Image: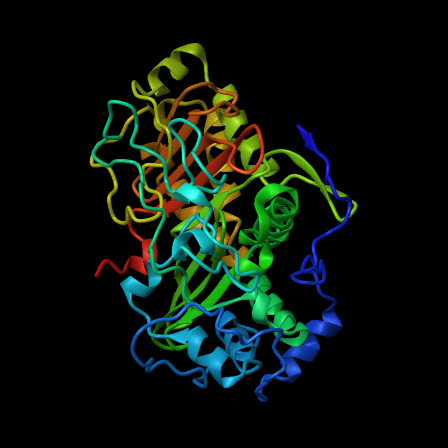
Length: 428
């Protein structure tokens, strides 16, 4: 599917230099680490608020070049109001402030610098949602509990995301943020940092092709929860429509990269700023290859009895992992089929920094024989209600096809969770 840009021009805030800035720009931002900048694009109250006064600081010891040091460098480019909105206490309640919805639909009002309002009916399409579908998390599996858990129905906190939106940031601040995001995410083509840059282009595309100012990269938020340093626990939080990055660090090491939400509309090829992009190409290809590699008997074992209209463990359904495993057990598969399962898992794990991804993937490989693959709908993973799940002692990955909201056609919701390490293991 190819979706052409109707306008042929990027939106006013497209700025492909954002998240694709030159090395010189990034180094310049780091040089500002000791200075506070008041040259933000906007300080008009678009920041998402939180109650209370934070005790977190951004001046502790942090190894040079680490994610913590780059978080401090980004923080030190902000003005006082931006700092207060961005650096918040680490807690489970703050960490849970993520969603698949645009900010404007969460808050029922301004969606960031654009100030978009919630469409009538509270759905992304404006007006009545397609039958049986909404961006808010959908409905539970038809006549099912999904092995003990129901599909997400809320889309996240009604208070909206924490932090400041990208629409508030100056070029220097954006460059510092880019350095931070690059350090926290992977370098594999089509995944990690590369996937996120395309994701932001896709949301700009939605804004220009029917979505309005509720959509676009200016409506994505960044927050630092806890003190970014080499001791203690803190989280780098970044997200917006169909995207949630939630990396938790303890004593300088990544201890949790989940929940990690990825969805995309448009699904497939689209043209933006003169380039053809496909945000979910790598993930979708790996998941379909996994199912295509199963025999008819294995597919029969893997097929779920119920219809899944959305994710079981989407936003708002934290620590609600099913108690029973369903599908075909990976220990029964051939060596080549096992490689396909691991390759599919890797397309999610490789969204985090390369060294961290290698460590996580190795642990999932150790548990691979006790992991299960299950699906419902068609194996093409292109039709509404097509669904696939990878469920192991630790790893949990879901992919679910939804009706289009802004555009015609279908689009996926997807989440990577970890039974042990969601929110870095923080459960209360």
